[in-house]
Length: 615
Ligand code: G6P
Image 1 (cartoon, helix red, strand yellow):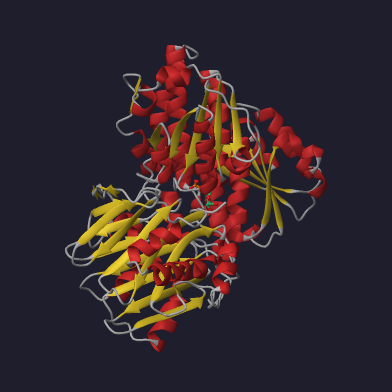
Image 2 (tube, protein in one colour):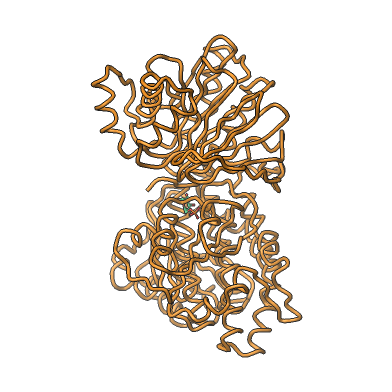
């Protein structure tokens, strides 16, 4: 939800901020803006549309000079995406300028109050209210910018990552965070500010991640001073060395990040195993689980909370945990969980799954579960993210940066981590026999190679995509472990091609969706061997007799479904429990190719954002 970038130092700020915005566009892309200070003037350019539109407009309208810059790429919350509502926002005097990621919930009351004191507003945003509140405080109290920001923030309710600049104090930028991420890149007499470290990795590998409730005055000449917003106490900032490299955040020859990330899955899954699984010795090491093994394996119930694709990974995990570790599992949308007065006890373990580690609803669900005494375990991809810090223990997925808005490698690596965890608990509890445990571990080790083989169907999938790209609707069916994969396949298609798609448990089809089936309707059926194969074959017959078009995901060498289906896509054979790691692959590729053929923006689908830091 919105990306923010800032620079103060000796370089030209414009190219740093512009490139930074391009890297953060995954966070929102309905409008963008940049403010530059050249030592005399504070100039601003903003526009509805993408960062590329901003570049064109800015370079033909204002000078790009200046060593201080703030930039913003927006995912609209308050006010439609247009030029005026785009950030940065000036204060009424024109002295202050702000960029903001988050929501100021009490902005309306603050706005009314400010109006009574003569402030006027151009935009519909909560952010313009905040910058004027800071100006009002600074006028009334005669305090420096840092203090004014602090006093103002203590009057707000909501979430924010902000950067504020005052042209009368040109050597400093004031930043603060509560609920939205903010990283400060520390260079030699220069500082970078961003929603994540990607905008500044080529300039410095030293970063400070502000904690919730902290603010910093970043001074070109004197360095950084961090303090708590609430009580003003000074904080000794921890300067972290970044592990990220430039190659990881570039497309590396692929046309889209999504395709690159789909193809990265064999190595991403291997990276998730690395150092954790010794298949031949029958060992799984996961520090976060090992250190809390009794607490987790004695759980009366495991509650999984997540959103979007991560929620689908949670559904797969439900089947796997119950099957292997025999612990009852419930999976909840984090947004529902947090608002429905759930029954949680100290005997519950909550697993929060989040690629970004920043999703606001998941974060709120964690806080609620902790308040009620549950033990909370996080499964995140982004190292050092808010959720990874808020949870009692956790395991990273090690998928590497995922930039395409539609999640791919995050999903398969989440399933990988959760499978390892379930296996570990099963072994500890004695709910799996040693031979079965060893077999599963050995098969897990073969999964990256099998994912690679599944990727080999790309050309066949492209051919099928071309036939069905103009479909208006699409149905996805799966059973057991593959029911959540059907949901995920449908979500992928919806997200990037805007074709209406529904995922269903195959047997539920006859309780409703079957009414939709006619010769226009493609139905993607996951029909791998084992499990409920024969039942799924019957479901395929039912579709066929209603003239539906069948695209079946089958086990290599299958002949029965091949005879019935209009198209088959093969995946290698594996143990039933591990099939989601393979069946997901063709569904990702199918939606990718359809979206490309329809000319959609695959990496930045309309209205979506990668990291949803608002409720
Ligand atoms: C957004 C993204 C999805 C993602 C979901 C949850 O909607 O577009 O791809 O699955 O958020 O995000 P998280 O980072 O918590 O996994």
